[in-house]
Length: 514
Image (cartoon, rainbow, N blue to C red; front, side, top):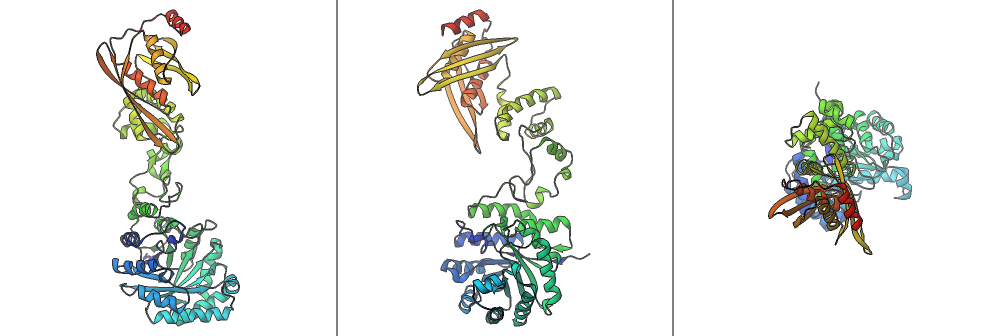
């Protein structure tokens, strides 16, 4: 069965740029326009030329920069607006003027302080004036979502008769429910006698979170152009998201097709987010950080067994390199094994079980565990060896003497000591030296912090010496002092000649003396 074409009209550079704080300069707009052309959009609404000299220049520059897409300039139903837009578009290979006026009684009475008939006449004049400059004229019936259907049909019939090639039926305030909006488009298809002379376009806003649903309802009922933005940016709660519409049509195979190369979606989404300084919410469909992320053990297990268990879209199809199996305290052994193997660590079932226990300790202190954390976990082996940390407690502060209590597990024994020092780590080192009855000299001490959202991971490297030999150690933990003690013990475990057979009674006596 042949598919019907859906024209993709992108208004990222016009409606999307109306978001406060997201304005772009001309060069940035050109770069995005070129990427939109590569993506495969059919029409680029490049700006509102009369609104500012900058917008005028941007529309003109984009007209020169791109080849295939129709370049569109927005106007009000005002002759001067249309004249300026025509001037801005004079270098476009395929120019379009987009003009219009309010269609709802709210706008007619309270915005224009006019009448229905006068507004239709003004719209017709605007279309006829635009037609003097370009063949391709789009008419928007602003706030059509709340307009009376019978009146809206008369307005649309009149502007098509005047020469409009596309008629835009905006749900400007995001008011409609999908069945209402779909019924409105169907009403126009059934009741506008010359509707076959124009393409019906849908331009939906997301005030109630239904922009994409309304757009799809419009297509089902006869619309053949969708007005969208990258990442759904736009006035207030935003516009219909280009990526959502493209992937709905592709996933459901509804008998419609676009020119969109969906593998280009994610890179362009990131570019727009960066240039407009507008972060993408993590749970945003298609392009959000979590769109292909799985953190629960049940989901991870299902995805690793067969991706279709929990993914209806292949991440590669929208330009995301792969899905993400996010390691958290809720993750199971299967997910940990997957990531360890990906990083080159092959483990037996017994080894994995031990690693998993250490992983859970790390995961309990973080929102999620990164590759960096796993490398640290495997390289540091911070809780394994002849000597292991069983307990650590430190006190410090502006008016407190730094004190540390340390319990070390040495074989089947747990030995304890306390000490004071110049700082909490120094006190812990003294306590450890006391337990071991050895003088360990700290030669080098380096702390690195890996910031992950509001959580930090301290990575500590130390170099110690004993009997004229040097040893290096590494530790990682969300607490800097704990990471430092892990690193100290990691180095000590490499001192093979160390004697640690201190009777417990002597350790207790040393603690009492301290």
